[in-house]
Amino acid sequence: MSAAEFVPQSRSLTTLSRAAKRCEGCDLYRHATQTVFGEGPASARLILVGEQPGDSEDREGHPFVGPAGKLLSTAMEEAEIDRSEVYVTNAVKHFKWEPRGTRRLHKKPSAREIAACRPWLDAEMEAVEPVGIVCLGATAAQALLGRDFRITRNRGGTDRVSRGPLGNCDVASVSNSSRSRGRSA
Ligand code: SF4
Image (tube, rainbow, N blue to C red):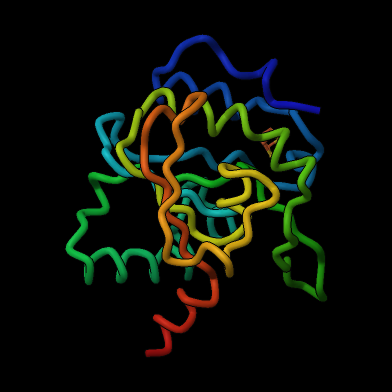
């Protein structure tokens, strides 16, 4: 189970995004509306990585357009970071959910699904070659830094990743709880 066979050689973000629409690298595509690939300029110095698309993203086909995306935009404005200059994506490109009445509730992707989708994330990293990566939540951090990564232990820290397609760039992680605290503050 892997996206590897669907990832083209090209590192054009347009080509990758198009190819990802046909990915069947794990079972998540079966119940999602569409692939939600990363978006942003290839020249971005910063990549933000979330866990997976949510309900709004699944319907609209774009990352970070739902409530979490609005929160993210506000946080970036406060930090004086121009969102249009940042590449945003998710560790997993299809929405995983479970029915609850008429609603679709977010369901955490499994380690297997995260690993299956990793070739897309690697390709995005190779296409953008960022200077820094910010992981939004534990799933994104573990997708990049390994399953042993614990966000409570590493919160606020920066991990320098120096191998594989990540090249030499700094990886920072932000926990969901700290983001929630930021929202209510
Ligand atoms: S979640 Fe990733 S690996 Fe699984 S089908 Fe979607 S794009 Fe492919």
